[in-house]
Length: 199
Image 1: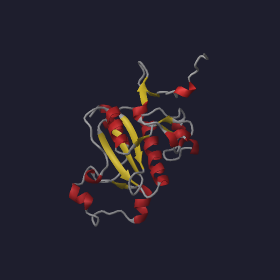
Image 2: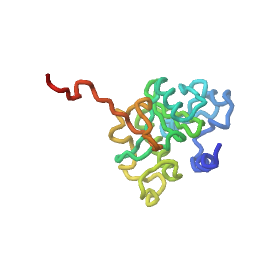
Image 3: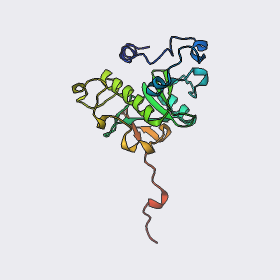
Image 4: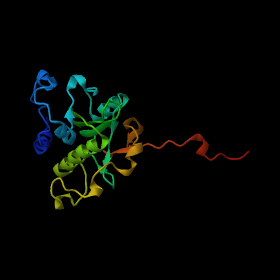
């Protein structure tokens, strides 16, 4: 793990015993089970054997492409102005509605963390907090004035999915612009839109 990942991980508060407990401890519902109100507020970590995440040995782009085929959707932008959510390919946030409950997935340089929520709104609050942490740690390009706001008290315009997130293109529809590190959407023009000379 790089020094940057270690530094960033140190800024993210503990989201549960996912990395400290054994599989048996995590899967025992009677042991350390969150109270219903606590679970509604924080989500529940998904154990690896119940996870829908497909591990890969490549970079984040490969991880995105493989997991999109498994029903996950990469979320590149967040907030009203569509600020960066993560720094692809090292830091990626993905969401899925293909399970009984909405899920969110955080990928940082090969390490993953998957959470399950009671509602999409609850998942969005979780992604709000992850996004703020990434912006404050410099792991994503967010609003320039973020330091002016106390932690956890960002304006409404900085929270929630970007307006165009309802129709986010999959990673397989993105291509890298020559020399650029940011994915650019590729444009496909239907053949009916191509002007043809009259005969």
